[in-house]
Image 1: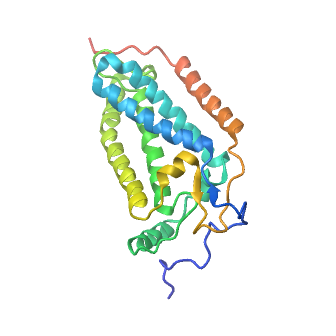
Image 2: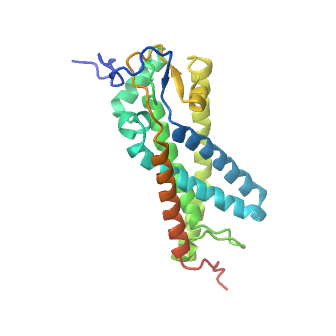
Image 3: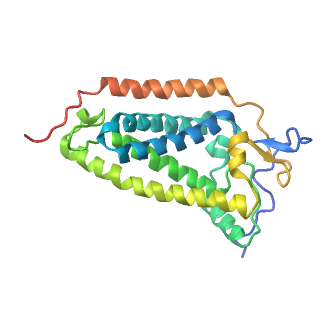
Length: 250
């Protein structure tokens, strides 16, 4: 019987070499890198503005808008973006993720030009929980002064339930972010794969990735179009929403 965890004889990442004479692969396009660091910044601003109190609600609200736009863009970019950013090129079968985890524990895991199978799972998890967190915030209220811009679409009871999800989910996101940061540090310090530098420069050393694909363009104009599209859609939903007036029950 064949071992389902055995390393495949041919990597899915091996493709026609591009710029094979160069020492580095261009893996992460500019829009993906900008998205990543803006999402980090938006999460930090959202946390600090919430911690600072109701006086900073506007900052909290706008950071939520940014998260919706950024995650919405990244979902579309996972369909229309560059090679390594597309979901089809880094989301893999669960068995491959388990196989990768097994080889990682044995220090035999191969390198991937884009997200490795476990990293892909983290990407999907973070995109999902960040989107849910931001969207529930649009319907939330603080039971004092402030309400989300879409509060007018629902009743106060449902708003409070969504507010509870919004508050509770933050701690799960914080835990997921902690795991993500720990994993990145593991790769940097133990496996000597500088994932942080790669997400800044967009490049990875070609060594160990011979035959892997290097992207030729960042598709910046397409990325700008998608950002404008998502921003416009969010703005339309907010402007068209009923007036958000807090219902205190008296």
